[in-house]
Amino acid sequence: MKKIFQYCFILLLFSCQREYSFENGQHAKGSLQSDTTNNCLPKTITGIYTQGISLTDSNFITVSINVKQAGLFSISTDTVNGYYFTASGSFAALGIIQVQLNGKGKPAAIDTDNFKVSFDSSACMFQITTMAQNPTAAYTLHGSPNDCMNFTIHGVLAKNIPATDSNYVLIELNVTSQGIYSIKTNTVNGYYFTGTGKLNSTGIQTVSLKAIGSPIQSGNDLFTVNAITTNCSFTDTVLTAISVTNPDHFPLTANSNWNYDDLLNTGDTLNRKIVDSAIVNGRYYKRVNEKPINGSVTQFSYNKVDTNYYEYCSADQYTTSLKFAPEIKANILFLKENLSTDSSWVSDEYIGPATINQQAIFLQYKFTCKDANATVTVNGKTFAHVYIIELKPQVRSAITYPYASTGEIKTIYYAKGVGIIYSKTIVNSYIFQERQIRNWQVN
Image (cartoon, rainbow, N blue to C red):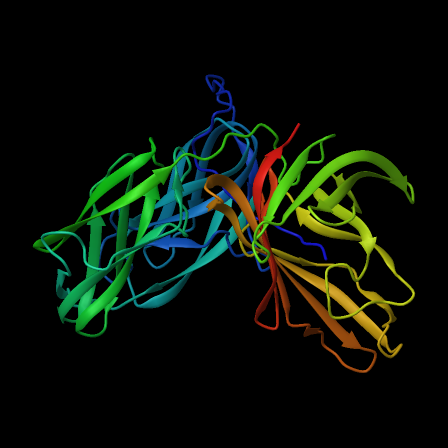
């Protein structure tokens, strides 16, 4: 049984690549990242948008740009319902970069506002709902003036890695009057937490404060939450991500190898090693030997074309629900570079008789990038720029349509410069296989 992993990620305006000089006025080139319906990715909208209330520093959006040429940039939206978003500066590095556009103006009416963001020759869309003016909520921080009571931190923050939507803290409020709230912490170590919204009931309520910024150093950071006349504190830990030199999420360099722990069978390990190359059907593949600690070697064939990764294998390799007889060979696109969160693709359709009753079965795989810029800790090591890929096998017969799930979900984490660091297969709600990386060498 094999696995596939994937994880995704995004950079901010920080980079350790060499910087460029723009005295000549060179303008940046690139494209806004969007999904298949042209919605901006990632969809990050911050702040409350209220009729008749001017926007502040708490009102901003973030968009992702694939920068192809460094230089000066100016990004803006059109003006809708009396307000707009804009940003300007310079890109000193190439690749996927996240940019914050600050809101300007004042919403004129209660409405659903559709904005168009433009950069270079690309554009994408996002939507904001403008609310009616509401009274300010009355509340106290649960735990004030000491530690915030029952706070929960989500996501992993790493040194010099920008925070994403997966980085936030949940805190509790004791609400005595419904209405709008706006809460912000102090800035510590280059980042802070903030949240706005509407409280629709009284009593103990939980709200989310999103991390904004990029931690400068690793260590423990003590934050103070300020809300109306009360405050409380919590501590967040910043880790140091491993350093990598390979730019790929699935390295295919000669003699690279990886060791994995089997989490379902304690003590069992698995080794994967790139051993040689071969040409199959006119395509050049790297061959990988996979060997359990107590078992025989299984060989896999992978290649990379432009920014796409393929595996040449049996078409039914990524499912346990069926086996084709006779075997059907396929070149399966299992991973891509430059992914965006929520982007997806579907494999080719494979058709053949199944071993159970020789009935013709149609098989395809749907891949979804659940996070294109994750920072995660696996087996005590912190990895940045991780793609989290979800794979779902789908089947149908010659007389049934559309495709139906087989009940299997494979989740694979691909760390930039390392490759697969974690994988889990769930079959009908039960964990079928789970592995995590122990150590590796990427040449």
